[in-house]
Length: 489
Ligand code: BES
Ligand code: MN
Ligand code: ZN
Image (cartoon, rainbow, N blue to C red; front, side, top):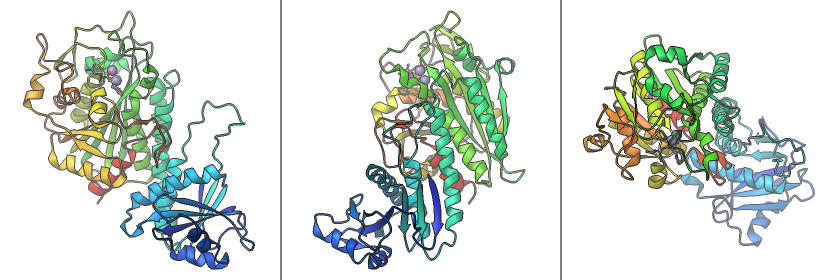
C-alpha cells in the first residue's frame, strides 16, 4: 500500500475519507470538502443515528459533481484528546472498513498533513499480510486498498515524517514476516542469513556457529540446540549510529525457531504455535532494521540466540548439568524451560563483549506471563527502576504496554539446585515468569537490565487496530521509541 501527497484530490481517487467529531461536527477539512459535494456529507451525518463516535464509520454514495464513488465519514470522537497513537488506531480501524467496502484509491483531505501521517501509519500497520505461501490468486480476502493520498495545502515536513514512519513499519513487517515463517523454512542458519541482509543498511552482522560457541563455552545455549539437525547460531548485529566513544545499548532476543519442549515434550495440541518462539529475536532484528534505515544516532547492538529445541537421541535430558559461558552451572530439570538457557549465554556474551550501558532482552519465555497479563501487556522485569520506567513510558506512547513484575531474593532462592549453581525451573506452578527472570538476572552482572516477557503479546488470535491476527511485531515500536527518547534525545 502506497502513501502519497497532493494539494488536490487526485482524479482517480474512488474514495474520499473525511472525519467527523462526536456530535456530528465535521472537521474543517471535511466541511471544506462538503462545500464541493453540495452538502451531502453534512446531510448524511444528520439523518441517522451516526454521531461521529470514535471508530464509527458511515458510507456515503458520492453525489454528482464529486469524481469519487464514495465518501467515508470516520468518527473521531473527542479529537481534542487525541495523541498520535489514537490517530494510528483510528487509521487501522478505517483501513479495515475501507477494505470491507472495497475502496482502492483513497484521498484524505486535511488541514494537518502531519496528523494524517500518523493515521496513515496506522493504516499501513493494519494492512500487513503474510502472503508467502498463498498460491491462489482468487483470494477473496485480498485487500483492495492500494493507495492513500494525503491532500493538504501545506505539506511541510509531511514527507519526512511519512518516510520515518515507513521505516518503522518496514521493521515491524520484517519482524512479523520472521515470526510468521514456519520452522521448516526459518531455522537458525536461515535466520542468520535474513539478519545478514541488514548489512545492506550499514549494520555489521556476524554469525557465530556451534564451533565458535563451543570455544566460548556456551554450554547452555548449545545444550538446547543439541537435539536438532539444524546448527545453532548466535547472531550479532551492530549499528554504530552514535559517536565512536558512545556506550552501547544492547538488545538481546530469544530465537527458539521451534520449541517442541525437547525431551520434556510439550502436549500436541497447539504445538504448532511454537514456531513463534523466536519472536524476541524477530523483534531485535526488526528493530535493527528500523534504527539503521532511519539512521538512529545511537550505538545499538542486537544479539539473537537462534536454536531449535527438539527431542532426539542426541537431545539433552532432564537432569543434565550444563556449564554456561559465565562459568556458572545449570541443572536442566525441564528441557522445556529452554529460553532462559539460550539467553543465559547470549546475555553473558553481550555484557562481556560490549559492556553496554543498558541491556534489554525480549523473549517468549513463559506461559505463566500469559496467565498473569493475558495478551494486552508484556511483563517487564528489571534490576533498574529508571530503565523500567523509561521502557514503560515508551510502551504507553506506542500502545505496546508493559507491566512491572517482581524480582527478589526469595524468588531467587527458588532456583537453587541440589547439584549445580542453579536449576532452570522454580517452584511448580508458582511465580513461573519470575523464576525465569531471576535466572536471567544472574547473567547480566551489575549492568542495568530489563527483561520483557512477550509470550502473550507477540501473537494475536484476533484482529487488533494496528495488527491483523497473527504476528504483532510487539516490541519494535516500543524500543524504537525508547531509543529515540532516551538514547538520541
Ligand atoms: N516458549 C515457551 C513459553 C510459551 C508458552 C510461550 C506459551 C508462548 C506461549 C517456553 O519455552 C516454555 O516452554 N516455558 C515453560 C517453562 C516451564 C517448563 C518452567 C512454560 O511456560 O510452561
Ligand atoms: Mn519451552
Ligand atoms: Zn520456548
